Length: 196
Picture 1 (cartoon, rainbow, N blue to C red):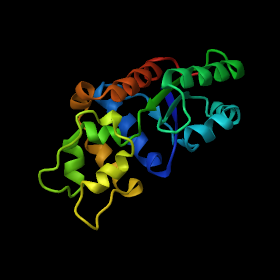
Picture 2: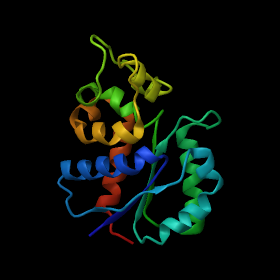
Picture 3: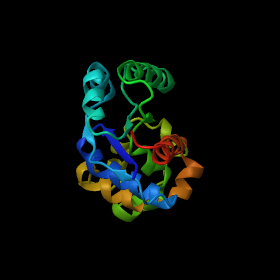
Picture 4: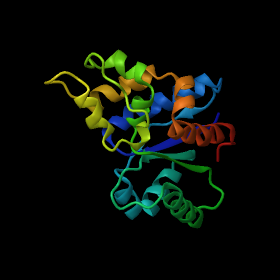
């Protein structure tokens, strides 16, 4: 059985990311891959500062490692350059270990803006609200989801993120969301690779 350890950013991700990964694996008929409880490591600048320590801790799980965090920090370069820096550091610690990065541009909730049906099932959205045509260009998708609700309601990651994630339609996401396709590919690679 293959094992995958997610490394995530925040408390909402601790529950939502395993749901997303498990459902996506089931969608592809990959029932034998085990998703381990995630390691929460904070935003990209914090993770980068302590990456070597975090990576060594992750290696102890003896699983493929999938880093899946938001890419919305103010001082980040392009996601490909940032990913390459982390890949180089990972290789210097343990060459050829199954490790993949899926940056979510700009954040996890960008997936919800791309797949409006699921967000509408869970959140009480204002009538006639129109979702953005380019959800990955929206900075603060969490704030957008809060403003799309009636006054007095707000999107709360620890309450809503897992529920909306459980509803996601992967076929719609694959068509509309580049970051979803960017996430799907490394997950499938790790699921189909041999465990360490």
